[in-house]
Length: 486
Image (cartoon, rainbow, N blue to C red; front, side, top):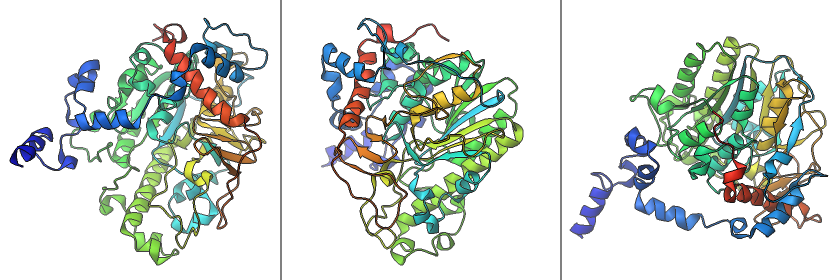
């Protein structure tokens, strides 16, 4: 017994509490920057858990011939592809001409765990995202609510947004080929062609997940970690620096920027376990939840989760106001990395049913610029994370500018449906790959929706095909990734 206790005391760095063991942020940077040592310092049990949880994707086990058949279904009509060529080159677009005057600064802000459902009227009494609701009401903010993230968890979404292809939980950020080569569809890489300096601002430590290496390779001139620029004494969760501290300091540094810059900003605080003290979160949970049932109002876990979400929302919107003051011509986009259920409200007094797919998966997209109207998206009612990059490029690029994107801009007509590796969406239906079922697309209400077998199986197949495309790029990285692009 003493031997077992002694082992874990040493293994956890002088404590028997796993939560109190030295975290990634305390590991010296020289270790984290090394490709071998960064992996070697991961806990053995954590590494084993990763292996068990993340088996090799089915598509990665397909032959080249099978992958080719999948990719052919994705290619634009009339495309001719030889297997030795990079299929990403066939997703080529020519910009139609700018929608706005070229902004000095472009911001893509990704909030941790920002769900669409909290913006629906059914949940108005929770007052979680009221700051974002106020921004939606701005006459120069366009808003899309039937919007799918690139992944159900954080990293696949961020990797996909950066690279322009779906990560599909293959963890491209952990692959050394993606530390050396850039996808032709990369967001920052294409912004640089428009003359923008590119910076990734992360509320945690970017070396966690090797986003320091991955970010630079995918086109970011700088990768800035809040754990570095906010100082060693800055308050933090296990994920990163408190949002209001991170964003305040980032805004100060941005004030000194004079050249055109593309900023990719990613927050961390709205992440469980919810340990930020109530005095930091601010607000009164009793007041915030006064209009909902006791089963919700009296649940301490829910109170903390809702308060954290409200805090994170206000921190982001305060940051947006600051950058609008400093850069009045800025183009600003805001979305979440994925949805979040915040303490599980299903079968409660507020939601007496199971969750809708839209509640489980959708995150919002907001686009703001002083020259755009609320109806920027026209008749488009659906979108995904991979629509963000082409939307930015079509809004600011000169006519004829060549860019590469799997999906078109939201300022242009969309396909009949859009897919991610986990879901698909049409203007009428939202489907889940895991179950193969679909439901009607509509705002959350008391009745919810019925899930049923889709008549059209095409979208389920195309979701798998998107993973096959990424699998092909991974397998043939030698000619699918560009080098010496910095």
